Length: 81
Image (cartoon, rainbow, N blue to C red; front, side, top):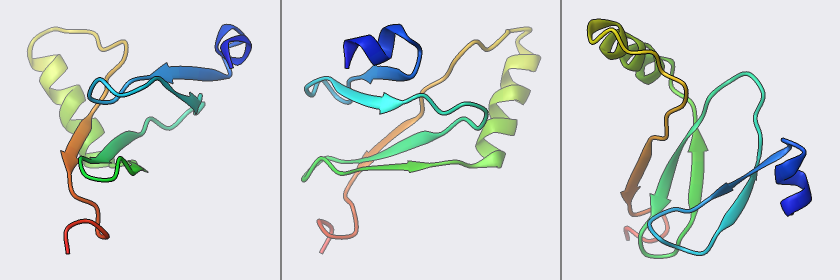
């Protein structure tokens, strides 16, 4: 896996201090994560409104975004029952 990271094909990720996970690098469209605090399930999602809002906030503060990580912690559909 470390070779894939070095080649730029994967990224190391840690969610809430958990063990290191590896994720394919998504070229183009940015994505964020919903993380279940009970079972550890991770759901990737994209949302154009969130992306636009981040750009507006950065512009207002004369800030150049290089990267962002949006992680939402809660309960997945299986665990919230």
